[in-house]
Length: 454
Image (cartoon, rainbow, N blue to C red; front, side):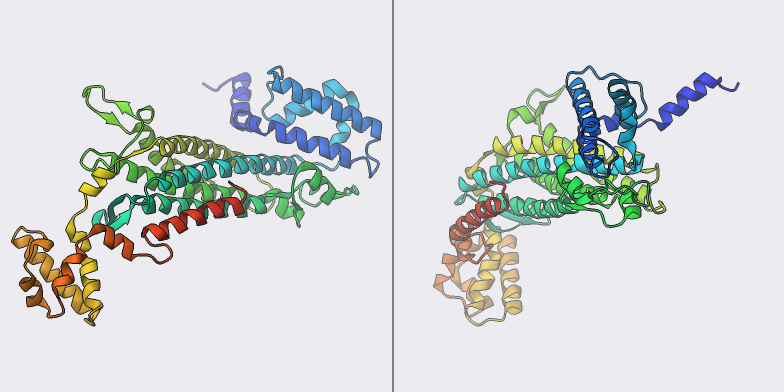
């Protein structure tokens, strides 16, 4: 049976509607419309009195929205605002659309909304960076195993591990700043695709709205979604870095290691096993990184098939952008709290140190006595294998066993088996010695201040 016309019309409206997500563009549309009304005075489209009437009406609509009194059944926010403006201001409302297309309205408000969101995201990332620095400051001298392939590798400071995530997030901040710069370009004044015949000062209009530049080509302006794709890439990279941090926290909080404790507010109990506290919020952050990747891939998949200028497909892409902002914002809020409330256990980290991770120091010892590194590597490898066969520590082996492998060994070789010495040896920029880490903390604080994030 064929659906009746009413059902068909209802289904069609639901299919076309973008209202569910686009309401978040409300404030940006009001802001842009007020600026556009101001810009229409100079070319003579509006008188000053008409402009004042429209601006007052737009502000009233803004107030109604803020008070929850703005109710509509329209399929998009732009039509809803336009209809309400007609009700308040009368026929003069129609003048506001002189030279202005829905295409440029969508792109302008989307950029404007995203700029505000990106600024807030940058502040949230900075809060996590500050929390990492604060934790690091208390654990400069806390030693732990550093891992590669999640196998014990070398001695590092806990602060060094924490700060590694600071610099990942610093790169994300730099990408975000670059994306903000490219997003802050105003399409308004581009018309549907060919520009406007009205003598509008586009640069003054852009400045009035809050953009730093204007778009250079009207066809490109109404079809450009690069700024949104770029943000989603930045969001995906941020998500990946937060996911890697989450993975470390999950592993290090496992009782088998016990390096740290995640605050109870970010964990959940087991339905069956009363002794368990599961790192649920951290696991969800790790999982949401995949969602951010999905938003990026979905967005790019739609974008790749579009011809030039505006296409309605971008309505679907906006949903991916909205979801990306919401998902990333929630992740940042949770991970900030997790890092700020983290309890680190230096004794557990120390207990996890194993003399085998000093093997590279042993090789360096030989290199300092003119043994070529590859030869030194092979010598130490044989010593490690011998110690494992005989179930003893390297430091428990007699000097004769060392000298049997190389005459370069002397009695001072046993000084190598000192974890603090191992860390202290690595004092170059970016190293894990206490002095290098304190310098790194100073540099991290300086980075935040220089980027206006402190």
